[in-house]
Amino acid sequence: MESINIDNVMEEIRREVQKKPAYKEPVTFEEIPLLSQAENAAMMGEKYDGALLRRNVDDMGAHYAVPYYRPLTGKGAFFKRVLRRLLCFLLRPAMEEITSFQSLTAVSLNDIFNYIRDQEAENQRKTRKIEALEAQIAALEAEAKQREGQA
Amino acid sequence: MRVVQLVSTLSFGDAVSNDAIALKKLLAQMGFTTGIYAEIIDRRLPRGIAQLLPEMPELSRGDVLIYHLSIGSELNYKMDQFHCRKMMIFHNVTPPAFLAPYSRISEELCLQGLAGVLNLNRTFDECLAVSEFNRQNLLTAGYTCPIEVRPILIPFEDYDREPDAATVEKYSDGWTNILFVGRVAPNKKHEDIIRAFACYKKTVNPKSRLILAGSSGGMELYKKRLEDYIAALGVEDVVFPGHITFEQILAFYRTAHVFLCMSEHEGFCVPLVEAMYFNVPIVAYASCAVPDTLGGSGILLQDKDPVFTAAVIDRLVTDEALRASVLEKQRRRLADFSYEKVSSLFQKQFTAFLKKENKPAAPHQ
Image 1 (cartoon, each protein chain N blue to C red):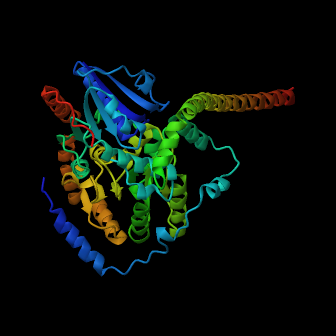
Image 2 (cartoon, each protein chain N blue to C red; image 1 turned 45 degrees about the vertical axis):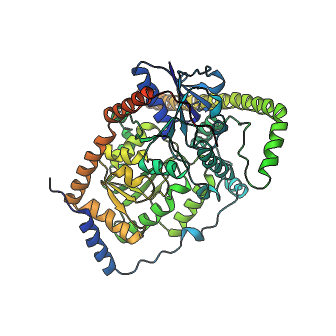
Image 3 (cartoon, rainbow over the protein chains, first blue to last red; image 1 turned 30 degrees about the vertical axis):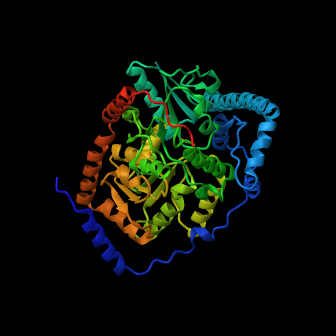
């Protein structure tokens, strides 16, 4: 296969681009305001969103653990480390209990999600069955009416 | 002798975790008693694939600990407690500045990750960096132990599964699909991909769409800002598929015409190799480990000018000869990442590591 010199192609494209009329961007990314966590949460709707629930359940499954250890930076990091060591006897078991509780919550929510999914599938199956039965009833009624008419 | 891998968090589908899982299989094949231990294990992973850290057996001098470093963790300050031979696999740490506007926790974890990299610079007997870029980072951080480069181990047979038929059908409609796969994270610069796509769609090809496949968990503010940016640009057909199955990812690769990467921080960038595997021509901004991973294949951009990027995409889509040439180079590069080649490299490096005199690491400074 003929190997093409990419640098030459790039140079050619660059020359072509220079001849094109200027492209004006309506906005830059930096001009887009950044929402705070609270504003973002407030914008979320109240409608059930299965895909969002799946994502949140997955995120819970990945982040259920609350590590006792937290990065300590900035001013007074040394004192914060000393405090952490002093409070270790209290904080570590508390964090472990929280992790354990959250782990159970994540498992339970996953089960709930699976239940909802199964129920939705079952509802769809039943809806299809009802539609088929209704069509069958309509056909039978039409047939009965026709027979009555003939009689 | 036991060979134990240690990771802070074993997640579902991320490059670090996939590498650890692939290595576990390989180490078992090499005849070692092995296991993965983690502080946190994602519940979506199959049961038994790893154990929590408290279940880790006590290691003796003859054992080997392989530590995957990619983030801040208490483990970065506990390595001295393991009295065995130690090897680190360095996946790199996202520079905190990227994350600062969107997630204080992520920013701090990465700050701590970088501090951990410095803290551990005299702890390991040997390091494996997943790219030359990462190796240079370790040298800059003052690592004096031997550092070898070993790409991420990718079991490609996973990619031969059937792609999701509905997704393939939906996106095989004659439109041009531009794809990027990766977490929605600020270092990956989705805004620059969107910017280039907007120019391409408006000035070159209106029948085109952009697919940004990847989880946005923890980066909701960044994603919201991207969505607002898309609305302000007035550009349509930008798809965030959100939570998708592996089969859907395969479908996106199968239907993609160009893979566009504008990332400014990658320790390796597995999706580039995936694009090579699926014969999708790559256009990527030359930054961090991206040029190393591409190894002369794909098309590297030296700047992010949207007009130029759009023109490059157009040329790649319309010029059959150029496309074929790019794909040929990508196929040749892909051979360097074959499972056989990388596993054989790891076996060679690991065997050589085991043969080395069992010197204790220099005391921590």
